Structure formats: C-alpha cells, structure tokens
Length: 508
Image (tube, rainbow, N blue to C red; front, side):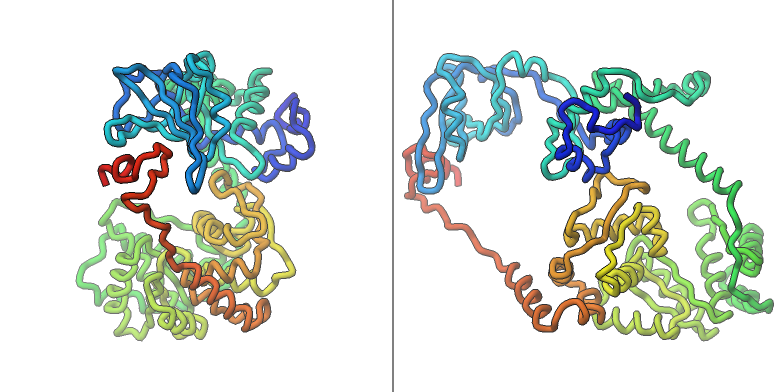
C-alpha cells in the first residue's frame, strides 16, 4: 500500500462508501491521510456524583439506583432515572429516547457524559451519553479527532479508516534533511502525520502542527520561486504616453515625497510603460507612504484613459480613500466612485452603470463586491454549461484573487445541487458551480441582494411570474412563529407529574 493506492483497497471500504469519500475529495490513501482533523475532543476524568457542580460539562461515574421510568407527556416520551446516593444524587433525563430504559440495568455502574444543570433543588443531566467504565477509561484524556464530513460519512468511520492505514507502515518519504529538521526543531514527517490524527498529548500535537505548517509555507515559497525563475513574461498591451502629468499632481500635494517614494513611483511608471505586464509588490512599514504611490499610479492610468480600482478591507477605509482621492483628483477632472456593501440598490446600479460606461476613472470598493456581480453574470448567461475545476483554476477563470473567490464559493454554496467542501478545500480542490436556479434566486432574495436577483440574465432563466412567487415565498418565510407557551399550572414537560411552576419553572 502506498499514497496512490485507492481507498477501496482499505478493508471495509466498498464502492458505495468510496463514492461518499469522493465528495470529500478523498480517492487515495494519500488523500485520506492529508484530510486533517478540524478540531479535537478531549474527555475529562470521570467524577463521583458528589463532585459535580451546576453548569459543568462532566463525566460522572455512578450506579443506577432504580429502573428507568418512561413517562408519556403530551409532546414526547421522557426517560428518567437517578444515580448516586441519598446524600448526593444526580437525575438523568432523556427526551424522545425510550429505548434508554433497556440499556440501563439497576445496580450497574456506568459513566454518563453531559452538562449538569440545577433545577430547583435537583441536579439534572439531560441527554447524557452512556459508556461502560472500561470503554470510558480507554477514551479518558485522549484527543479524539473531529473531521470535516459529508452526508453518509460519520466521524467514527473516518477515524477508524485513518487508524487502520496508519497502523500499517510509514507511507510518506521524508524529504527534509536531518540538518534542516534539527535547525528548526521539526519532527519527522510520518510522525507528524500520525500525531496530527491521533495525538498522544498536547505537546505531540503542537510538534505535529509545527512540522506541517512549516512544510506548507516551505513548499509555497519553493513553488513561487520556481514559477519566478520559469515565468514567461506576458506582453503589455497598454500604451502610456510620456508627459509631466504626475509631476503636476505631485506639486499639488501638501507634503514633499520622500526619496524612497519617488524611486518607487519612478519604477512603477517605468513598469507600466514596459513591454511586459507589471509584477510588483510595494512593501513598507505602516505610515511609510505606500498608498500615495498607488494613488499616483492610478491617476497616471486615468490620464491615459484607463480605469483602475482599489479594494479596501473595510468600508470605513474605503470611504476615507474615496474622500482623499476626490480632493486630490478633482482639479484634474479624474472621476472617482465608491462601491460598498452598505449602499442602496439604486446607488449600486447607478455606480455600476458609470463604471460600465467608462464615466468613472477610479473605483474605490470593498473586497470583491463588483467582481461578484461579474461572476454571476457569466454563470447565469450559460446555465447549460455547469462550471467545474480546481479552486485555483476557477479563480483565474473569473479573474479573482484566490481568497476572494473562496468567499464567493462560500456565498453560493447553499444554492448548489451538490455543495462544495468549503471548510476543507484548498487551491487544488475540484469544485462545481452547478447551481439550482430557483434556490439561487431564493437565496439572493433572502440576502436582499437586489443587484444580483435583479440581473437581466434572470429573465432567460425564470419567468417573471415564477420570480414573483419565489420572492413572496422567501419574504413570508421570515415570519416568526412563536412556540406555544407553557402555563405555570400546566404539567411540567420533564414528566415529573408536578405543575410547571413547582418544577422546572420554579425559578422562572
């Protein structure tokens, strides 16, 4: 068995189960082992009944004092029993689980795991998980992995399958020299894989995470360096004239540019006029004056009849940039627009129109707001062509930064026929944009995104009547229906036989 071995070679994995694993992009043994847990559960040391307190999530070791009683209320069966002693008693309650009665024998001792709450004079644990003493002792203080799942795949199945593979042999070849591992205090790779799935303790978990995080960054940097060395330069199809425009703009600034700023601007302008597309990163400390270089370059582009955009991480910063640029650009006839999520639908439509008609030279926005609209326009225009590919490929296809495209995938996920594994995907994960038309329209209405459900492409996908029906259906679904209120003199729903005011409602 090796990394490329199909998971169907693992004992207990047939065609049906393998198909379910494929929804998690797990087809090989290597895929399985690189499907890391998203978190861990650690069970506490089991306590005696006398040691537990109100509000605590605890494991309680106790002897069942009497045969569980199943009480039938108007709404559900309620199973009740007690553990402990006359001095320290804990009541156990299960709702809609009458079969619990047959699992608990009076006089036997079990471990019950759940949250303890005080109700009147009683300590109560509801919906407790039940373990034998031996079974719980095996789990006690262990780090149990919790994986990203899909329908039909349980956490127990993933855990069992990973465990069966890791118990066989070392499947990964160590590629880092011992000298490097020693210098950076990194554990061996196969050890890291085993401990990330089933850590012995917190120290081994941290060691495994450190090694895997190092590898992720190391391989990313190595890949970037490789592409840098092998990169084929793309031709620059934009033409910029040489004149004194930016010098005139700089002269109106209320301050003098530093020598470093002047050099950076000169290099940017040179790159914009070179035969090849610019690939440049401006780096500097906070407050060193990076933003003004971008503003001056954007003004240079506007002067040459090109549009440019700047995306800010917050609306506050976007608005600040907008106000500053308006003051700077106004004397030169450069038109600036602001595009943010808080704008009204009418304002968004007006702004989009100005951008499309090239009435705006510089666009200030938040993240990928206007990119999102462009992507939806494309996928709605060709509904007969379901789009699929890796996250990186589709981000490139729609000309979006990878981070922003992941946000787009998250937004559309609930509207897809087969949702993508958002929590566990990476740049190489294969995803699909095969959407349900009605569900997508419905969710756009729910999000109050009228600039999206108002796109003209919808007229070819859904009739006007059906769009109106979906709109009304969504709006009516937001009506809040309150559950029936329990009267103080009504029987308590816990099944005690007492009135609500003398039982669970005593402190309300």
